[in-house]
Length: 74
Image 1 (cartoon, rainbow, N blue to C red):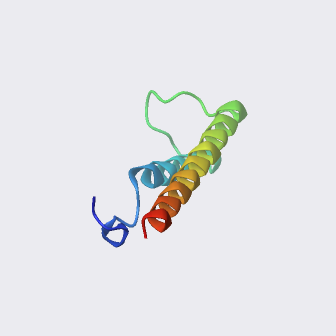
Image 2 (cartoon, rainbow, N blue to C red):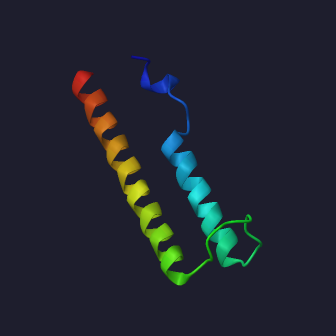
Image 3 (tube, one colour):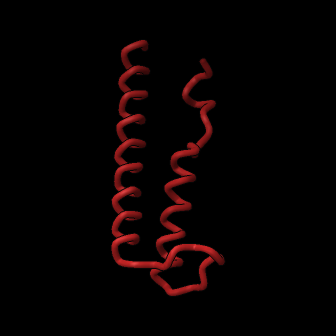
């Protein structure tokens, strides 16, 4: 396994979270959406925000597990 310092600065999950946040901001701003996209509703925005919070919590939990594992092996 590569040392923690060699790990990329952003994870795929963080990129996905960033994309979700950008999508939510775009929809809230009323910018045009891609053709075929479902209509923007408050329920969809709330679900997107809930998903964002869930992903952020998972990322933080994963980082804590890594930190704990590194300190246990040191």
